[in-house]
Image 1 (cartoon, one colour):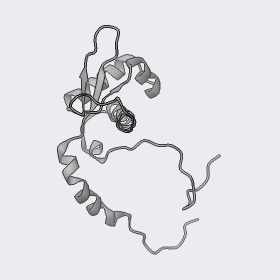
Image 2 (spheres, helix red, strand yellow):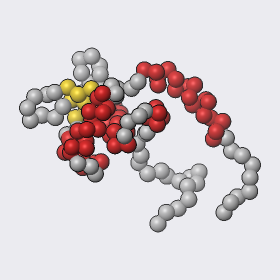
Image 3 (cartoon, helix red, strand yellow):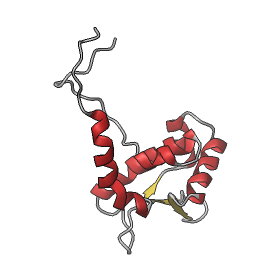
Image 4 (tube, helix red, strand yellow):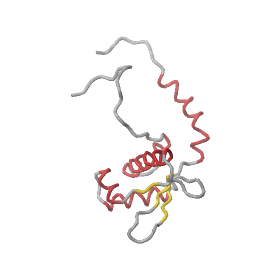
Length: 135
């Protein structure tokens, strides 16, 4: 059963989808994977022990676990990770045989400086308009 969203509706847990991904020419699996990794990195940000000596936040996520979360094959996950690495959206550091790679999630510098401009330019698109209820 579903219900209409109201001002008082409690939202289910969700992940943030960065706007810059909409403009990137990467496949949907890579975009979803980045969103999942960013969500996990945000958790690492909040907890002690998940940053290296340079202060860079990292996370661990096995290929198997990512495949399960995404409902994709391990090969598809490996391909998507390679895409993200090629686009410099992640950096993987090997931890040795039998250990998962340390994954660093990266944010494009140009998106950090353009965030305010992008939000203000799109703000007008979401302004309410006068109209009759369509229900």
